[in-house]
Amino acid sequence: MSASTPSPSSSPSPSPSPRTELRAQADVASWLAAGLVLRRVPGEAEDDVTVAGSILACASELATMPPPGVIADVATLLGGARPQLEPPAGAGEALKQALRAYDDDVLGRLVQTPRFDDVLAAYAHLPATQRPQAIALVVGALCERAGFAGLSVNPATLRRALARPREERETTGRAELRSAATANRLAEAYQRLARGARQSRALVDDREVFAIDHLQVLGSFARRMAADHIGAAAEELTRTLPRRLPAGRQQRGARDTQLADEDTYPAGGFTAITPGGSSANIENLVSSELVYMEDHQAVDLFTLRYVEGELLFYTRDESVFRRHRHLITFLLGTDLDDARVKDPDVPWQRLVLALGLLVAAIRWLTDQLGHEALAVRLAFPPRRLVEERELVALLLEGEITSGIVQVVEEPAGAAIRAAEAAGATAISDLVLVSLGPVPPLPRGQRALHLSLAAAWPAAYELAPRRGTPLPPEPGTDAWTEWGEVAEDLLRWLV
Image (cartoon, rainbow, N blue to C red):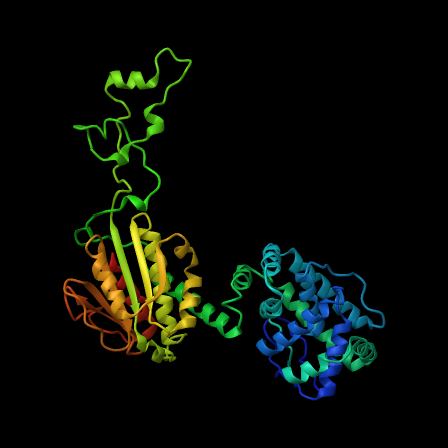
């Protein structure tokens, strides 16, 4: 083949040698045929369609590709097969040693990884049309963790090579393996992959399980990268936030929660619900304890406590029917499409940082105020930021499932009116996130503007003290400002 492979590296990091590319049709066909002959996981004839689709998916999504046999092995492993032990006939001693290292350090470690069974379960639930993408995702994760850099192959040229009959490819592949140059290149690639995998902690983890479970949203490499960036920004901003903040009780107050909010009753007593008792609220009744008695006792506990005047005489300090009801609405402006810019001194785009800040803030609020009647609405503009809305909904899946968070597509006017209406029965806070001016707000609505017009964010209180900046003066370090504004936002909310 005309292209050469980078020399072996002593560490799992990508080789410093320049990446090579296969362009000629003959080179691609030879590389594909020889690589597929070295498959270590035998598959059925019907697996060829999945293997071919997986190779094309890897060529479209990965910057460089491992040997084709590696992709075929991962595809067949995810289908439930297991590796074979003997190397193919005709392989030289160097290639046999490389394949043994690959069997032990890549395939063996992959199937023994604790999360691999979860990857198999997630893969088994996918439709056939999405499985090549899932295989490309696992192959990309394996190469990334092993620090492996392979060859760049043109997808169109590779598609023509895959169209050749299987028997013709196998004949060509066995002939190519008898060439010392081809065998040495493949042996070197397998050795580098095995060496990098040997030094990797885990070849697959929860990220692959999550991505395969939500492949309908995270099917493309661009979406997975965007989700990773938003999640990484949220994690970095979370590290800058304080673990706890004092609550402003005088501002938040208390509101009666609705009866429909809870379907269970807290512990309480009989005297607490009788007229003239410690309380007249039905919430303190536990009927199972109220009639508790033992058949084999001379005096039952109900009679004994009644005579002593201590019949289940205890109440809860805070009941579920008397809690702080707090609605927080995050309203994203329609101009945030223009925030897809990368500012100096920050690792991500301005929009990615803003979404990461919101995710970190919502998780912090859920953790700190989840015991109260907290509700968070994240309102995206209609027909704008559609992909970002889907990604944020995935990152906040746990909070959405618990019923605390809602991610909706709603016009600004409707979101503001909903926040105003909620103020009659709850403490309602509105946070507007945009680049430009804010829309008119109803009188008495407590609101804050998170402005992304500059390289560093700025928070301005709109009501009750309009125009008050938080913090008073912007700093010089943009990344530090993101962390400080996130903390100031939380202080304002609690």
